[in-house]
Image (cartoon, rainbow over all chains, first blue to last red; front, top):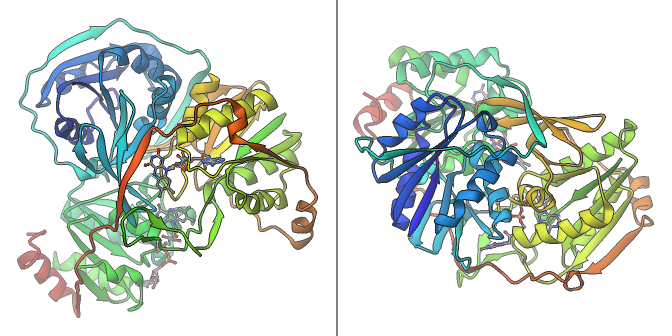
Length: 308
Length: 250
Ligand SMILES: Cc1cc2nc3c(=O)[nH]c(=O)nc-3n(C[C@H](O)[C@H](O)[C@H](O)COP(=O)(O)OP(=O)(O)OC[C@H]3O[C@@H](n4cnc5c(N)ncnc54)[C@H](O)[C@@H]3O)c2cc1C
Ligand SMILES: Cc1cc2nc3c(=O)[nH]c(=O)nc-3n(C[C@H](O)[C@H](O)[C@H](O)COP(=O)(O)OP(=O)(O)OC[C@H]3O[C@@H](n4cnc5c(N)ncnc54)[C@H](O)[C@@H]3O)c2cc1C
């Protein structure tokens, strides 16, 4: 079995989630190669070479892959696919974007967002916002899979894989990158942070998210939000936790002024410890919380910050 | 410019689904169904493009059993002009759905196809990208803004780090994210009018595509339940528990 894992990165560093996706590949079992597609991404390739369990790193460093446009990257992966039995990416924006395209080009059905590996062809994945867990057996000879990183433990990074440069440049010529508007933050990545503190509609406005910042600073936490908080414009879209936002599973998740809708729970209920602060004792969030505090957040948050 | 919008009938988003006791599947008997929320956003975007004079016709298509005509009528009431129902009793996987949609695209030749980014039942997030690959079109997934400009469309996408804008040659595929628009409510006269709008029914089997499944559903189980937690009375108690009992802070 030969497995190609797509490395998630931003041309400067390898995303921590890739280490978890490699763990999923190990669970399937086989010779694992890591593909780094980008531009001026030598640093990423160096990091990739250290990932345990990887025997070879393929580097496609070309302007055509600078923004990892789905149209171009899918052609690259399709060209490489002949040598592999399984192609695996992380279910983050890049993987979610181009992988189904690869699957269709190969005439293979994709198994999305797996959280478990039963065997080389049978996988476990959540459906219905995590309210049901399906076990699916793929009948395709070649597997195309995306992985929910939070469900796997990262592999170590003291390996030394061979690095091979590819001279591929597949530019479909039908799309181009215009601009990025990325949120600048000194905080850890939502997907990788050990502690996440999220605010909901109860926060009332964007300014009040400052109440979460002091606590986040003390705990080394990332800050998240409910959809209602994002829709209301309190915070940017990349902070949304949930079925249709980011999936997180930190050691500690603190939900503040969040009611606990199915769609929000889908994104955080695999957290190790959940704390809920809400003034409504009937809020459904308390049903999943390990520690619930019925309180007004405007009193509770400053006190909590003071006592940490 | 013609816009094609594929829509899916799914469980209503307020319903918490249950797994059948024999673990064969989820139980959808007597469950409230609705148009997939992301598809509703797709219909709204297409209708707005028409109202702005950019689009000339909005065609919706749904693949499924007879009942998905309810959701087709909903889309027509929201402002779509006509509809295609591809009838099948089978639950098709995304690749087969995309292959059927490819045939519709070949016949209808739309300049823009707007789909939902994911359906809230199977949560696959695949169909739009697969259709893009099969038709050779560029894709703007997870769209929060769509601007048609001559032979191109600029799509602003919700990505992990924030927003990204790409420029795509038309014809193109767009998949919707939550913040693209806020769908309108259909008014009663529009619901009445929708009943008379053209609906073309075709059998999936007549498309000459091999629709055999690529995977089997081995079982469906309920998720692990979290054990009930406790209520703490004060911040001091909370901090204490987190330090000594949960040991997640120091
Ligand atoms: C297709 C679709 C996808 C969705 N995807 C997501 C998703 O990915 N993520 C997501 O989060 N949601 C998602 N939603 C939305 C979801 O259904 C809920 O609407 C949303 O999560 C509610 O956000 P909230 O809990 O912040 O707001 P509300 O439900 O309004 O809850 C606010 C809470 O704050 C509490 N509160 C108010 N004031 C105070 C105070 N002073 N002190 C303490 N507590 C206070 C209230 O008691 C209440 O419980 C989705 C919905 C749909 C239809
Ligand atoms: C309980 C359950 C278990 C299933 N198990 C499996 C399984 O194990 N393996 C498997 O491959 N499939 C399975 N399916 C079927 C499958 O997940 C979907 O119905 C099918 O793949 C369609 O893709 P999607 O809804 O996941 O599309 P997504 O890619 O999530 O949907 C995106 C968009 O595609 C469009 N679209 C999707 N379906 C249609 C449609 N029917 N008509 C028109 N437009 C549409 C809509 O615009 C939608 O917003 C299962 C379905 C259910 C309900």
